[in-house]
Image (cartoon, rainbow, N blue to C red; front, side, top):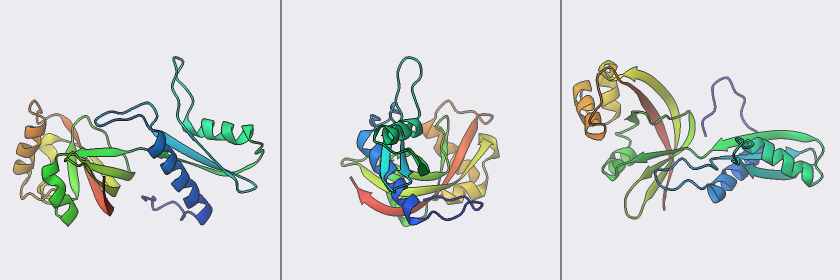
Length: 197
């Protein structure tokens, strides 16, 4: 799990909440392959008496409540009056072509460059669209915004390539209409563990 340098370490109770929130969104998300879905955030709250309650974000024509509000409402409805802490997790998925699986697994590819596919710091699932699908658990440790023309040799090497020109050429295979003045996100990640789905 990604923790900013300025944050304190989570205690056992908070880690249990994160686990509950993650399980809740994993079990109840409606996001299919290549979809964002509506239910994408899970939250968990711990009452003063250490009971835990969970919720997911909802949607209706007026917008819908956040997962945190749903978890707090569930706690209140079951008699909890004082809360100790609350957490929220996002069902963050980064999809990959299966040809990158070996490079990511071996650690020769630790970055991916994305166009109009925003990423965020923290836990993520790297989904390789094989048959069967392969999922690697990772932490996104950095997201750099830059123009295609600003990509550097260092970015290319972190993707298992040798030079920025090679990286630009590879990106254009995925995004054929990409221009040098388009902004991309260079996403750096670290693999945590491996699980095949």
